Structure formats: C-alpha cells, structure tokens
Image (cartoon, rainbow, N blue to C red):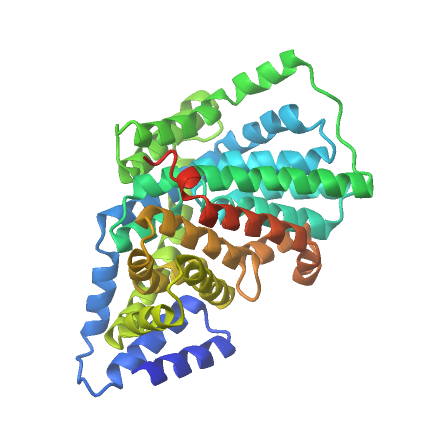
Amino acid sequence: MLTPLLISFAVLLILRIPVAAAMGISGAIALLSSDMNLPVAVVPQRVFVMLDSTSLLAIPFFILAGAIMERGGMARRMIHFAQTMVGHWRGGLAQVDVLASTIFSSLTGSSAASASATGSILIPAMKRAGYPAGYAAALEASSAAIGPIIPPSIIMVIYGSLAGVSVGAMFLAGIIPGLLITLGLFIVNAIMARRHGWGGGDRVPMRARLIAGRDAGAALLAPVIIIGGILGGVFTPTEAGAVAVVYSAAVGVLVYREVRLRELVGVMREAAVTTGIIGLIIASAGIFGWVLALEQVPQAIVAWVQAVTDSPTIAVLLVIGCVLVIGCVVDVTAAVIILVPVFAPLGLSYGFDPVHFGVIICIALVYGNVTPPVGLLLFLTAAIAKCSVNEVMRNQLPFYMVLTAALGITVAFPGLILLLAK
C-alpha cells in the first residue's frame, strides 16, 4: 500500500490539488488497491474515528472566539495599547506588530487569525512609514507564527488528543518558547531599525498608556482568564474554548458594542467554514496516517533512528530535520496528524518527557507556516502587503534565525520549558 500512497500523493500535489484532498484521495487509493480486500466503508469509518475526540472540540471554540474578537474591536484596542507601550522604541511600528501579535495569539491559538487581525492594520501602516513591503510581511508572518506556540494552540490540541498527552500541560509549556520568540523578534527589529534608520514614534505619557490599557482592559483580561483558568484547574482546555467564546461575545456585544447580536450569525458562519476546512484536513490526514500505521512506517522509522544513534540529542535533531522537510510540503495541521503516531513513541523510547517532546515537535512545525511551497502565512501576509512571496522570503532569514534559536533552547533546556507545566 505504501507505494500507491506515496506515488498518488506526489502526483496530486504536482497537479496542485489541495493538500487535504490529496491526502484523503491517496489514502483511499492505497486502501482500496491493497491486497487486504478492505471494504469501501473503511474510509468513512476512519474519518469518523479521527474526528470523534472530545479534545478536538476546543478547535471550533477558539476559532469562533478569535473571529468574534476580531470583529468586536478587541484586536484594534490591543494594537493601540501595544503602540502606547513600545511604539516609541527604535523601529516602533515593527515592535508594535510583534507585541500585538503575541497578545492576539494568546487569545485565538491560530496563526492565520493573528496575521489577518494585526497584519491588515499594521502592514499598511508600516509601508506608509517607509518599511519595505517584504520586510513588513515577513515580520507579520513570523510574529503570527507565535500563535501555534503560545496557548491556546490548535496544533497542541491535536497533538495532545492523538498522543494522549495533557493538552493543558502542553499549553503551559508553550508559554516560555513563545515569549522567547517574541524577545528574539524584538531584538532583530532593533538591529534592522538601527541599520536602516527606522525610528520610533513619540513617547506616550503614562496617563495615555493607562487610558489605552483601560480601553483594552476587557481584551487583555481574556488571556488571563483562559490561561489562569487552565493553570488553576478551573476548567479544561476544551472548556476554556467555550469560556473564550462566551467572554468574547459578551465583551463585543455588551462592553465595546461593536458587534450586534444579528451579526454574530455571520461571524459563526465564517468560523464554521474555517472549522470545516480544518476538520477536512484532520479527517484526510487520518486516512493517510492510518495507511502509514498499517504499513508499520512509524515502527520502521523508530527502528532506523535507534540503529543510527543511541544519543537522544542526535535522535531529536533527526526528528526535527524530518519535521522541517515534511512541514515544507504539507499543511501544518495535516503534518501534526501524520507525524504524531510516528515520532511520539520515538520520543518516549529516548526518555523525553512527552510534554517537552510535543512542544519541540510543535515549534518545528511552525516552520511550515513560514516556508514555501505551502507556507500559509507567507501567502497571506504577501497578499496583505501587495508584494510577491519571493520578496517576503528575501526578508525572512533573520526571523528564521529567531525560530531556530527558540527551538534550540527548547531542546537544550527541558527544565526551563516545563517550568510552568509542573
């Protein structure tokens, strides 16, 4: 089955068939062409099994919460608050973009939502201020990539549900790596601003900062409620998603009054479409991954790595290399579904903490969002900036260095990464 699977998948990708459809079709072809005489009914059965997970309920909740926050004025107020805090730094608008993306990522867990909400406002503003379009888009793509790392994280929900790892613990373990990326982006911006002469705005008086903080207070309270509730054991990550929906709707309708009740129907429709797309990816990747499991590909990879080295460090570097390659050609959501059954047992066999190993995989997968040919954030931010993807890529190198450094620290210092998760 493996040969028909890989050949059909490669052909479908070459024909520019969407990755989700390519995985589902190639998986079905492999199953139906095998000598195991499997019935056609096994395909929808595997789809149902893949989606039948309580943990996955967190995904539509956080997607809906993010959509309400974006429509309800929360994103705009957070950007204004970020501007009062760091807008006077060297490269002020670029620094505002990083801080705003970090805050918004802590609300939605979606890199695409973060890029759309903050990028649509800040990329045009950076272009007007003299920043090259490619740099503005590359920065937004890299800062939005924090979304799958800082809790809540959609790919961590998927990883935890498939690997049997606590999603709440993974959320907490993602906080420090996410903040390390934020710090690294601040430093890169400062260096680039000094090199190109990009200045900052006027320092905002403390009174104006307090006013901006009060105006954005309801929005800034959301991550405290979500993360604090999980950390305090008040609710599970899935319940946190439901709380985020109720809270964002209450703030958007009753506090900021920028969303009318009848408009929530349209917001829910948009969120349902996004959820459906992710669900299709999960279902298709489930079929693809099940074929790999039937062919014992995970066991073969584990055996190969164990034959190559006894060192956990070299083993995890090999895993990261495989993840980076797969992330370049497969959507991040699909990649995590395919890779978890392969690499989660490998991490355990080398003595890695399952939460720590899961965070390593998720950070490595983030590269998939900012690398061609399927890097969603590259195409999204290039469209907002009205420039080519090649122009974005020419400005991406220093931001890759930040992601690499954060990944290296995550691998080397498990005690630091797991500090909040204990």
